[in-house]
Amino acid sequence: MAEYKLLLPSMGEGVMEATIISWLYNEGDMVKEDDSVVEIATDKVDSDVPTPVSGKIVKILKQKDEVAKIGEAIAILETEADASSDIASTQTASTPEPEVIKTLEEPLAHVTTTNAKAAISTDLFLSPLVKSIVNQENISDAELKTITGSGLEGRITKEDILEFLKNRGNTPVAAPVQTSPAVVETPKPVATTAPVTPISVAEGDEIIPMDRMRKIIAENMVKAKHIAPHVTSFIETDVTNVVRWRAKHKSAFEKREGEKLTFMPIFVKAVVKAIQDFPMINVSVNGDNIIKKKNINIGMATALPDGNLIVPVIKNADQLSLSGLAKAINDLAFRARNKKLRPEDTQGATYTISNVGSFGNLMGTPIIPQPQVAILAIGAIVKKPAVLETPDGDVIAIRNLMFMSHSYDHRVVDGSLGGMMLKHIHDYLENWDINTEI
Image (cartoon, rainbow, N blue to C red; front, side, top):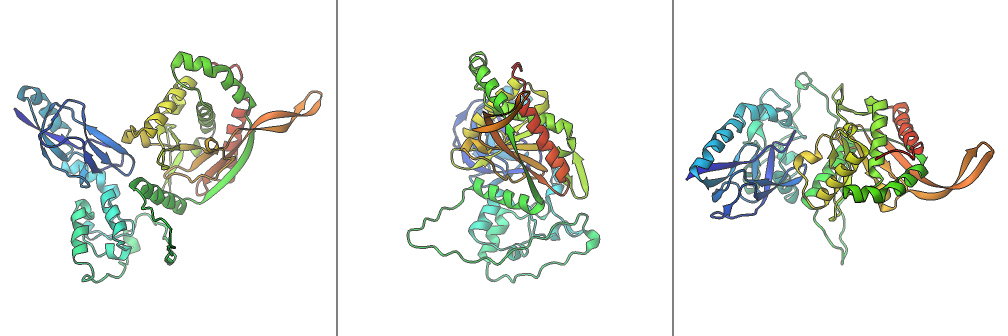
């Protein structure tokens, strides 16, 4: 028999740790290779961790609600000796060195002085577990400034917060630290917080605590509005050809592929073509630099059964056919609604589409997900009388019309670029070829 350490695997770019939600097995239980043994949560998505080996769980190292870092052991398994020899060497080779972990975490440590341990900032990086404790205990930003983090690069850990709470009230609140401009590399916008007015709760009112995902959504939305000055353009599009084309092909496509043919693949195809026309919409902002993205990865805002929202990503959407887009979209939507998304499924989007028409809404003004600079909202398709130009003169006909709204970051996207991008999407949909093959 041999000992195998189950490590927390990489959760994708920018994710350095995860919170244990629950163990699916207990100590002493036997597990088979590829069995999911533990559910975890990151700031991106909930997921589960499978075991790459078969064996018996002899020790659980990270309990529920504890935070584990990428590459850290979370459990110990007892395996067959001959089966574990090759695994052990692979595990040793793939375990991140401390120097590598430190290098990857440097962007997450918001250092404002030359002494990393003494760094204090209102933009502190807090794990999901620490954030939840801070919110539950109403720990103010000023109080956070008094806590010296014992984690990597001075980050505040669960133990630091619990120790602070033990002595709360006996610790003086420090005055804000004045940072010399000489050591600040990139100026950051200063958040202005209005005085919080207590909200009265009347008899019969119900208080519903936000769940973890709702807290993350709220934080990200406030951050997005604070960072990017939003501008929104609108256009009404005649999608009669699109409606007729889908009606013509949806039955045959479902019989052939076993997949439903929705409007979304067509919208994504039009957006991809417009991005190729205007690649400066496929960018991110990093301080005073604009990062022009090579890949076109389309985020797809998806409502979950519990009322929350998640944005799975169609990677390299420009390389997929209509059939490929339909399959990718259906797969992501199904796994999102059934909590089967992997962390990498929600990362790397360069442009996002939100189909508000699926709720019967005519239009919306969506919030741009950071670090993207634009998002498209698609409204409901409605039959309306419209004026058509014909060789014999103008006529009124019943057409399928749809509003689209394009929100963009006015720091780097001016009205001309944002408006022309929307117009090109409009043109591609309005002039959709009824003979397009799928």
